[in-house]
Image (cartoon, rainbow, N blue to C red; front, side, top):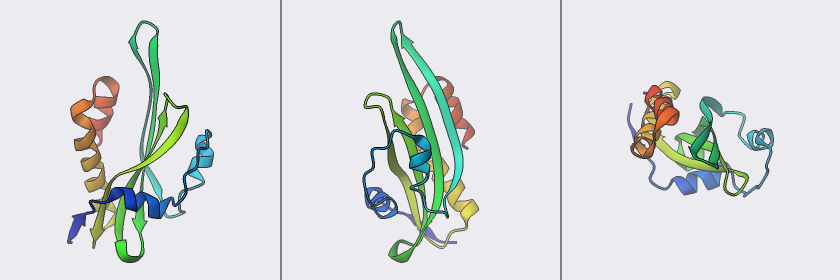
Length: 132
């Protein structure tokens, strides 16, 4: 099977979720996903950084097929921005070409892990290492 990473993941995200939506309810954000998406991993924790400084981490990862000119698969991350009090979507990785859903999922999760691991610590780091 031959596939390539798609460099312009912002464009992929724009095609998959074409409008900005500042919903504060996680379930409403899930409703924005195409029916073809499936959840592959999630992580939730409250980080107690120092006395009086905590923040919430809530991340859910989805894989979904791309259609049209960008045939392939994409990884979407829905994450809670505790500073702004809103959910945010991003597309950390996408592949194009002939790829099975199993290979795409493994490849995309490995790319996500490799991107996030250098700046991770604690339970989030353990979560990333478990993605391998």
